[in-house]
Length: 288
Image 1 (cartoon, helix red, strand yellow):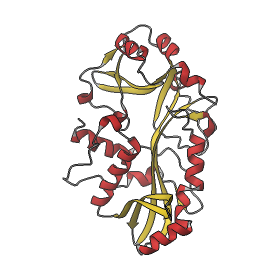
Image 2: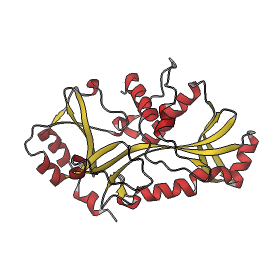
Image 3: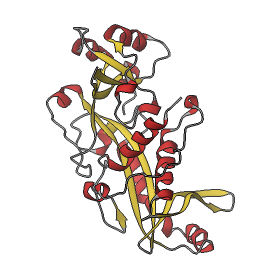
């Protein structure tokens, strides 16, 4: 069961962590680090939304619900609607993640939390793949720009908003997450990224199973396996009650039920050092 302290640290990370993309124009705002540092913390005493079933946990929904709860409690923002669907008859045209009033103007906030592993030279968004290789950075970015962030301009969306007496002044992309660089580049602090990406983005590493065996062959390191419910905020000492030895992690990686890209944190008694993905050959073979 996820504890309240973990939920509050997740929300703090959602607010304070570096954005993945910084690019503005066309009526869309990509918030920068300075804007995010000015956001008020969550000070309400009410419990934060708790995932109902960790076995059917959806990280994107968790991210959105944390933001919605924070917005609903913040004095400087007024949450008008969350997950407002736009319909064309029986067809769903899109959904407004968050409609937020601030200083007498309404903004559409598109919330996204993404995790990508870099391949090639890393300088193109097409080089970055999710743990599910069907999720690629350039595809997600293109859909955000062409469709999701322009939803307020759709005729059916305009009708939906008008029925609620809402007029959207602009869209804001609230995009967080981490980019995972190849292990050797991560160790050398060689963080080549596409021009749209924030240089101060949250960083991790990745390597293949075979390279993991070579890199940690001395067996002296300890790890924590990270299910999706632990993908946001860094681990606290309370999360380190049963770290895995190198050999215990290797046994997990050899399991037929292990994911094609397994997320782990490298830890000491003091806490988390870094985090990354270890990929099976099948993951590498699926890269297009």
